[in-house]
Amino acid sequence: MKLDISIERKEYWKQQGIKILLFAKWELRDQFRNRLLGGAWLFLQPLSYILIFTLVFSHLMNARLQQFDSPYAYSIYLISGILLWNLMAGILQRLTNIYAEKASLIKKVPISLVLMPLYVPLVELVIFLIAGTFFGIFLISIHYSPTLYWLWLPVIVLLSVFFTYNLGLILGILSVFMPDLRNFISILLQLAFWMTPIVYVDSILPTWVAEWLMFNPFYWGVSNIHKIILHGQAPDLALLVLLFGTGVIMAFFARYLQKRLEKDVRDLL
Image 1: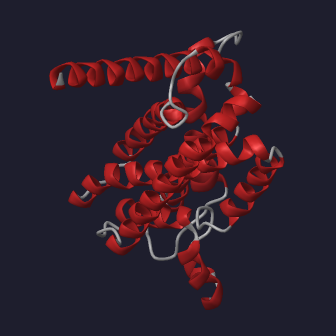
Image 2: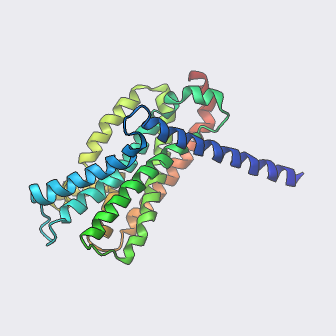
């Protein structure tokens, strides 16, 4: 009997995994359907903004970071921050609208409301890895040497995804009952971008403003990315623990909402 239950569970998770991978494949395909260059845009988009940021800020605008001699320091600072920001913001924005956007799919396919959206971070991670590869090629081309602290980068990325995914699940469930929440999140993300040191360094901020950065979850990941890639220093473990702990709290709350409201969500879709 126990063996039968174990086999059923394995089969269940296998089927859920297959569905999530299929959703991710369809999402990537649909993003570039009916475009002249098709899937090539998956590579051209990240390549273009890395080239633009590098050429414009390093050569045309001659942007510099005072404490660094390299003419590419600001470009490295900007691109590394934007890569993680785009990953987190992309996941959050997509998940906020996920249940309304995929209502017909949810009605047809038997899948958990918590598991189904997993394809979103998978797709965003693919885009992130492609952009990160181009960024890595750029760093190699300017003879930028990595340190052992770079081994922390996957940890920071996964913790950022973990936090953002669970927050997105909460917002996605709530937005079914409060559609205006989707517009509010779009505005909030614009504010959050400028409240996160990506295009500017936090050292230029007044002390009282810099203290408020500690309440910005995007800052927890982005600041550590800057610390590792640009400064060659170890990450701030306190911020990583904070990112993980907040993500765990969000995960429990998302699970609670899913259990409490799943029937209502499916009825409203």
